[in-house]
Structure formats: structure tokens, C-alpha cells
Image (tube, rainbow, N blue to C red):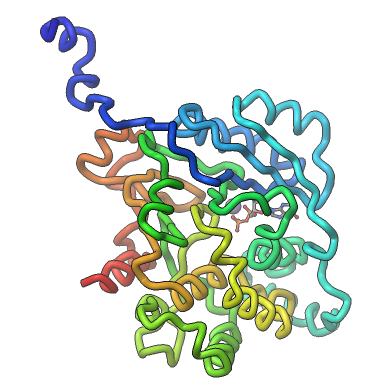
Length: 336
Ligand code: GDP
Ligand code: MN
């Protein structure tokens, strides 16, 4: 009886599970997680969070990638976390290591200059390999080629809330190509010449710029200078066909030709963000307000009904959205 239901669970009555977990409709999608063998504890922790809050109801596959072969013990520990198919891929050398044509003396000087400014990962070549791989190559990996949409996960991230619908289907049905949960400003010393390179590209390829672009998210003066706003790419649900498109391929190849992934420390976050903001319509970028997410040192915590209905474990007062370095306001201004 109705009375009995209320006795059993006030939560179930307040938030009935209607329309949720319609897992019959599938998107052509996968999780993707890049990691080192030494990241194992953070990897299983992140995967557990994703599985508990979403994927145990959907069983989208996992693709794990590494520039070195995953060890048997890594694979064993990962394999018990999900019932979904999990594949382990090796990244081809040419998609990872610093290319031969990069002037190593110039690259070293760039690293030293950045170290003197105490920038995080300033002296790291592997970090630069990772940024370049995430910018230009992951979506070409043979394990990812069959898929259109991906959800990027990193070690040691956390999902705070139940996700009671399929975000991949949402992306497809709403014609979205890129999405985010946290948006912030980049460290300027990591990208000294990125914007001038972008402007050079725009001048030679005006045809690639979407007339309904989000330039005003990137620039406060119509494109003259970059305001450093970007989407934090450790969380991404996006459309790999966008990265595989002629426009993005031309853009990445142009950036690559300048060597800025090594002479500076161009991150995949500003690279992806700038491309999504320029080569797509602004309404094709989505802010997943309802996805509670943390990657040190910031988090996005849903507010109001989204917080309670998602059974979110985050403190709604701790959400990066309107912090001084957040660009969410700028993103929202595009639509007002
Ligand atoms: P941060 O989030 O910018 O502090 O950088 P992370 O250390 O989290 O690295 C970003 C992602 O790339 C994570 O998924 C890491 O596991 C992965 N990663 C970083 N460096 C390497 C590397 O040298 N090899 C591999 N296989 N993965 C890496
Ligand atoms: Mn990280």
C-alpha cells in the first residue's frame, strides 16, 4: 500500500526512479582512461566511482591506454571493477615521444625558463607527451577508432552524484560535441605563443570558424587577446568525430608544426577548448551542471534539486562555478 511505501523509504517516495536508467538505447561510446602502471590505486578508485554512480546500470566499455604495456597485476586489479568490457591499449611511439624534428636545445631552454617561474610540470617531457597525445592522437588509437563519443576519466577523480540518464545519448540527441563540469583560467606562462598561433590559423582558414562560435568565451576583445578561459579536460564527454574532422586535424597539425607542445607546454585543455569554441556552434558545448565531479584541487557540486535528486555527497557550498578563476559566468554570458 501507499502507506507502507512511505514507511520503507522516504527517499524513494521523494525521488521516484521514473524514467531513469533507460539503458535500452545505446550510444556508440566508451570510457577512456590514460594511465601509468604506477597510477593503479587512483585508477581503480576513479573507475569504482564511475561504476557506482553510473556505469553499473549502463555497462559502457572501458579503454585504458598507456605508453608502456600494462602489467598483469594492473590488469587484474582493474578487471574486477566493472562488468563492462575493458581493453588495455599500448600507445604507438610516434603518438607519444617528442618528435625528432623538435630542436632539443630550444625545448630544454623552454623547460628551464618555465622551471624558473615555478610552473607545475615545467621540467617534465612526459607531461608534454601526454598533453600532445591528448590533443592530437588519442582518438586515432585503434581501440578508440570504432567509437564516436568518449568520456575521459583520470586517476583519483570522484563522481559525487547518481547519474540517472545516459550523458552520451544526451550529447547525441542535443547535437553536442563537447562538454565540461569545470571551467577556469590557464597559467599564461605555459602558452606564451598559443594565441598568436591560433590567430595565424584563423587568418589562413576563416572557413573553419563557425559563424555561431564561442569566441566571446575565449576573448574579451573579439579575439585580439586570449582571456585564458578553458574547459578542464580531465573530465570530458565529447564527440571524437569533431577531433577527427578536417578543421580540427588542420588545426592540430598547424599547432604541432610550431612545436609549442615542447618549446612551451601547451595543454590539451586550452587546445581542445579553443577548437570547440571556434569550430563548432556555441550551443554545441554543454555544461553538465548535474554531474558532481572532483579532480584535485577543484570540484563542481550540483545545486538545489539536482543535488538532492542525485544523492550528491559533495557540499553544495563547495563548488568552483562562481569562484574568481572560474569561467562559467563567461560561458553563461554567451547565451544571454
Ligand atoms: P594533471 O591532472 O594535469 O595534474 O596531470 P596528471 O598527472 O593527472 O596526468 C593527466 C593524465 O595523463 C592522467 O590520466 C595520467 O595518468 C596520465 N599521464 C600523465 N603522464 C603520463 C605518462 O607519462 N604515461 C602515461 N601512460 N600516462 C600519463
Ligand atoms: Mn589529473
